Length: 355
Ligand code: SF4
Ligand code: SF4
Ligand code: SF4
Image 1: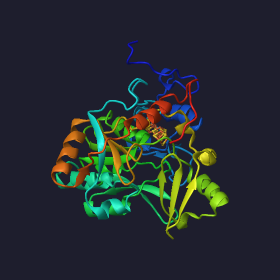
Image 2: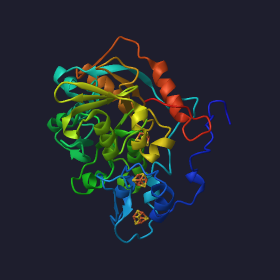
Image 3: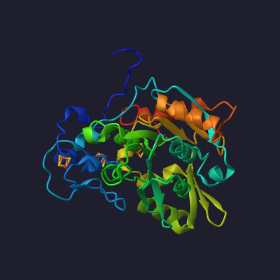
Image 4: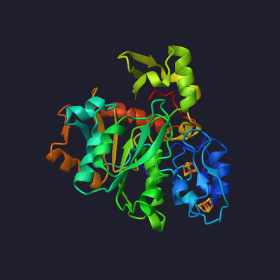
């Protein structure tokens, strides 16, 4: 093993690569039952007879709702069985460059959780024909979230907030391809979701259909019911009172009445999804572009450009004035520290973590 390929040993997380994960029965036993399913919906999208389901309102994980024909496709799209992660020596994964960016248009970033770059890039990707559809998360007044397919870029601004629960972002991919006949789909999501989207391309029907993945920095997500139970107990806040949520070293809850409340991450520990306890992908390493608030000043995004597609999109968006780049140096050491901490998850060296 070369110096650049040192992985933390998997003592506390299962090594699924050595298991025989062939059908959904195996996924159910080794991923769903031990609470490792991240509800990404990758298996649901690729299942030919459409007998799998992920209910976005429950935390149960993928379920079989019909007769499995044992085609063995679903495990190929599962990010838990096929984790995408660089060695600990490359805490940010593979990338071309990084920097601090925000949307140029004030209207765009003032409504976003932070710099508004995700929405600006999606709008620009539509404008230049890079994508013909995007799968994004949407929440209702009660903060229930689901994934929707957007084909009209004018609709994107309705969905510019970050949601901190598992959402089956990959499930709509089949509808996007089969019913809407889309050929160049973008997916915005956490590392597990963008990794699952890329994994679907192992199946011929989906090959070449994922035109862009925008990955959000992520150290954990919470079960919605548990999150709001704790927040109600501690701060007497109801879901409908919340305008937006920002996760940095603590959870910043901005209310519709203009107040801001803080919850410490440790206080929400009970609400964290099981899959996040063994996830080593803080910076969404499988994405074309990764983005987060960490390492950037308030109102800006730390952006990691990983692929040529991502680089061309950023350059084009800069040139057209859709996004702007800060001359300020990003706090990359801080992001590296966070990413390194996460790469120790599931190992004996696991550290206590913030976000
Ligand atoms: S039919 Fe294939 S993809 Fe669907 S659940 Fe069974 S093995 Fe998985
Ligand atoms: S593909 Fe996603 S939804 Fe399906 S079992 Fe794996 S983690 Fe769960
Ligand atoms: S911590 Fe990992 S498994 Fe959990 S939501 Fe984030 S990317 Fe997915």
